[in-house]
Length: 454
Image (cartoon, one colour):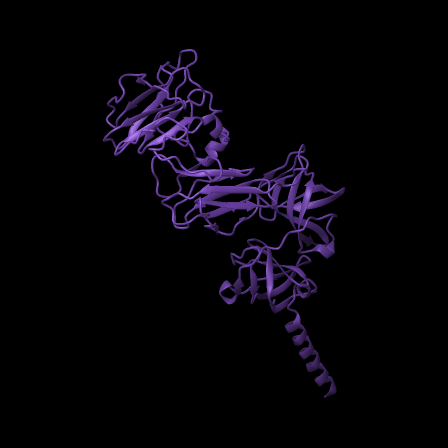
């Protein structure tokens, strides 16, 4: 009888122990599988599905295979599942459904910089490993592999746990956001985000945009080249619009940002990119699109779009009324500017090729208004054919609404690409974008079947 009572007492103590094992430190200390393991209140440190790293006052641990959509900073109650060791790595697997959780948004914890190579005591912690030399190796998307990297004089095994490709360059070093793991007693680091290292550290990147008058709100969705979302899932975070009609967001601890401005209701820009602070005006691309075809042009922060009747600082910009006005900014100081245009029935609108020679105003802009038309096909040139020395010519372009454009400053090979900018603006001051960046933001006019005139 005594042995029987001792047996049930042991079972009761084990059950009490399991019920009390609700901290992150308790999960990290398990030596076998524990069913119905429940974590009490935790804060999300880093989230990149299916890995969720959470912390409480006792430490940080891993919740695996959760389809939660949680974001860093979320305070969560109600996570439970199977506590287990995966080849030595403690984790909470097969967790309860999101509907069982209580989630309160909060401030994302600061991820610390590592100073030494990680040890077993750091398993399930998240660090920035700065200035890592990865040689000329490459992660590929075909499979998960480990690559050795030199960090602060020690060799660390970095693993592409999310099977994301990344080619390293031996002439550069990298900052790697790493989640410390263990596999059969060997320490490895899951590479969650990879960025080129800069000795001076990261300066804050401020992204600003003027809210279009037709948008009801300004949302910003952002992501890293390698890594998860920076501002949560789509449509991102709602950004406050100041009294001047501008929205700004500051990114800390990153060297580059991919982002999309949107109104939260289906209207958005194309994918944008920057590695420095930038302010932009959002422009509906040509032809008009109701959703993901807005582009962005670089402008002075806090400035306002020039209205068609505004003559401040430049000559008068024609008001097209019900027609279409085409504007050409002479960014390359072409020796002359001609406009050749035709309608949808191939009827010339400005005479035979090369069309009409345009007069440039004092701001080096030329304008032509077409009345009672729904669209205009056109080519800007300097009046020379492609086989003549010094020829300048764009591809075939189509406008279905008024547009002001200038030749891209690095698109100097024949034919020229055109970028939409503010009417009357000084093109030489506006162009901070390279041609590749202009392509990335989609700031090019609608290009149809090219037919270069010879």
